[in-house]
Length: 143
Length: 375
Image 1 (cartoon, rainbow over the protein chains, first blue to last red):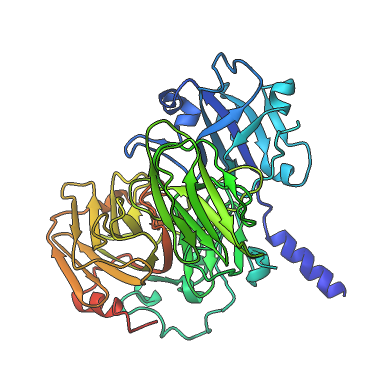
Image 2 (image 1 turned 45 degrees about the vertical axis):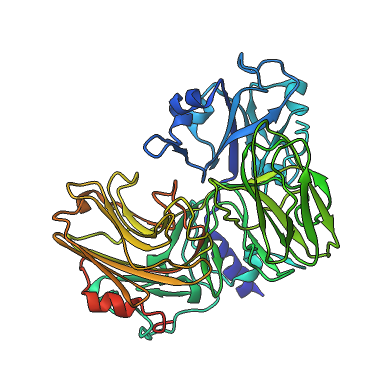
């Protein structure tokens, strides 16, 4: 039994812990503004005219009671989720990214809002679609 | 239970860091046995042979480890899967390595139907104009009819028979009517990137539409490159031959495709192709005849300054004479896409091999791509 425990501990030590998947919800007046933004535009391939869809979900719809988000009508805005394993400092500092959610914490039912300038019921009553496949954010967010 | 997690399927000793995987799958390579390695790609000659379908890796599993970026889950249930087939759900940034088949690599898609593993009649949300594909897995059927959109059609999707329709005018809704649904059924409504219907793997939805991110897959360990090199890939494309975008099998790349060398299935024709981008002598050459959807194809291409050659499925051949190659900037091997950002395989890559310092002779390319050998 002790041998099994030692082996299990050795195995656990050998397997690095994966960073949680972090979703940044960023709002722009239009797609061109997103492409031109430093941190978000880093995921835009100008040569091919495509977003890096392995890490972004461009053009999502966000429903919120807020009349304006960052001075932009959320119903006509260009929204984009930028998603990575772990937080990214450049996106943390990008004021166009109004909500940062931890997908893995949400899956386990914890407090998943890491940061947000979309606040109060404007956020807790907000919903979005499409959701990333495999995510389990509440609808509406509730936080 | 129909759905399985990746961890429960494979016996894996994962050496994982930031999404990379050492592939030691359910079958371990026989120690000391290397007669499965493609001629010309031996470890002794510096080659790398990653036979994903059979979990055989030369010179080592580490050499074939993959770095995967996919910001969502993905499943292994294809539109062509058997009715009610069990499928695996792979987590974020995990390679969709299907034992016996290979690595499933697809572009990003959205399933516009809710509760996709419990099909029920529903009205979609507002759909942007485009060509949609509805596919159904299982005993039941799904029938299109108009909501507020123009062009929903009246097609009926059933097991193995997807339908497509094109909407136009003001964005609107469509109605999907389900009949005789079975307990293990699934369905999906997805927007194609163009006018050709090319459905992809199941995206499981609940109370909201859901999007699967694209599969950006690279070899974790870059094998290097000399002045000459050879690429090989075996793959099974899912899209029709008329699909409007090239489907890349494997690509040497400088990170952003301004310099690259690839083998691929060509857009609109489905022909095998090999291509160099960048440098003083870029070229794109398609050859032979169409590689059918759902059929395993093998392409090998040798690149040397002044002389390039390719073979496909043992019988199709091509030569080229580009004077120079932009190998000096290569840093990455992408599998199943152009630089991880476009031209996705939309299918399964079952094997890749790289000979990083030699352009193999034409006879070897033909032998390596012979469908009846080295299976």
